[in-house]
Length: 494
Ligand code: MV4
Figure 1 (cartoon, protein in one colour):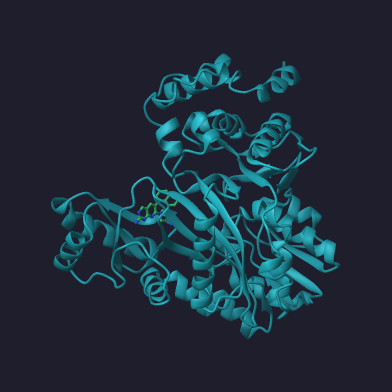
Figure 2: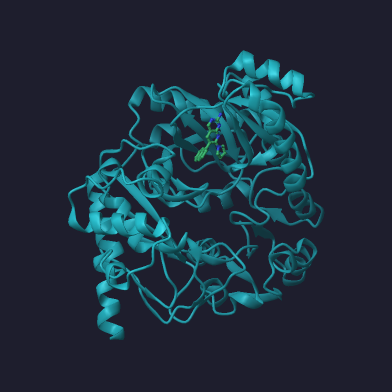
């Protein structure tokens, strides 16, 4: 195993990795920028090193500086967390050259899955069902038009170097094709320095289901079941859960498919295979995330596996510690992402010092947080403060525990999305599981179609949000009534 791990990340995921290192007796080394002097990862690590200014490009994304630091301090491995260098094949190769173990996949797997048409071809060749479309970049408007007609409108144009929702465009009919083709190519060139684009059939109202897999360097693979991640806004996930509501037969099929996808790209590390699932439980490969994911804790809850610990063991060349036959789903877990943003002001990020902080706790509650009382939330990074995860014997219990935990959670100094999360948890479609990837947009951000709900608080909040989105002025009184959660604020600051 490793003696010292440099954590090339920040916030809650850096804290998550520091805690594991402490559990295992491995020295943890944090890096922090000027903007993160008050962050928990900086404070909790065994060693902390300032690597430069707030701007990521000069600190958390400074490859040379990070690798030189790892060498200087005698770190034998680097954990990238998620984001930053997690899926950067050049960084992985630089680690290899410096003789430092990258706790993650090979650069080959990352490159293969990063090229969306190459990935689609590979998946198709290995019996993994992909969304109908093309497996090569389009070479002309004419070819694209012909392929669109074959696939059937509506179609989606996607960037070959894209992913995570960047560089996509829906085309409803032939007349829209030419200008959309040119615009998507232009945007792809701007965003990814690569203007290759391809086509997929547009899947209507799908759910987003993803399968957690683990592969080791000896070619052993297991899956840790699936997560439901449809509750999102603009490709930013908000609530995730495990397991999803799929039946056992579909589960057997989708998890087997995910393992085939991982094998096809010779994957080792923890990884996630993403699928779109339509109304009839047909699922299609979307992309593979070659990293640890934000929402991994819900899977840890239902399987009892420490996914980050497995990542370390895999990177060290060990065999997976568990067999598939030893795994089963235990209960249910829910994750709410706590963001420093103002749902009532177009989800604008909220920055500043956390002047008051009280974490929730109690049965079935886990909080992975990057910040505490006194921490500064800056404009420079992702607005994620923490991940609140609850679990229980079934979905109803974890939802009720989540409501309790959100109600206990006190954060002042920055605006958070806690009231918005509470609102989602009251929504009948969330409660009965009849939602798809458009849930937030359809139920909260357009029209008044959710006002039929008879819960008083839900109705008040819903009216307010819909009014605000029509640019009507904020009424402070109503705002404070969105959730019980805000009552403590009134008491404290009156
Ligand atoms: C799609 C799709 C519908 N049909 N592809 C968005 C993120 C990127 N990973 C792929 N995405 C989508 N691809 C086809 N052929 C709808 C989405 C999509 C989406 C997917 C998963 C989770 C949330 C989403 C939100 C909007 C669009």
